[in-house]
Length: 154
Picture 1 (cartoon, helix red, strand yellow):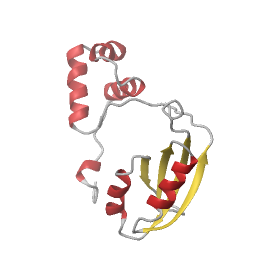
Picture 2 (spheres, rainbow, N blue to C red):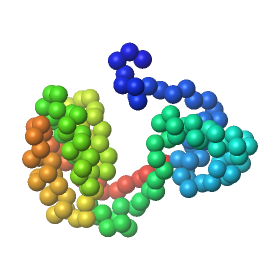
Picture 3 (tube, helix red, strand yellow):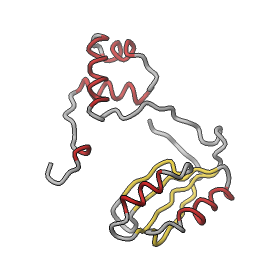
């Protein structure tokens, strides 16, 4: 793929790889034995496939899905940013350092970046947006969309 960064090149996947990914997406704590049983392959084959998918960066980490409300994060918003041209790489690292920012995406359209921000309440959400995001060099404009209800499809 011309112009792609080395870590952004697609890895060829077959149906077994996709089935393994689906199983681990559904339950990241699933044992290799259980993955093998569900995908109908040997445990050794499942272990080898998971190791390859991890080594090639297809599987990047195993994590827990957290209910934000039960975890005390009662206020969530999608925040869009318009940014100065050529400021993305530096800005990306600054955004990653903000604990309340749960997802970052560089997008095309009327804005450049969209963030999922989760905070303990609206006062905390306001602090993150006004004091942290809007004050970053390179951020030209923000727009905030409050989340009233989350539905995780994974």
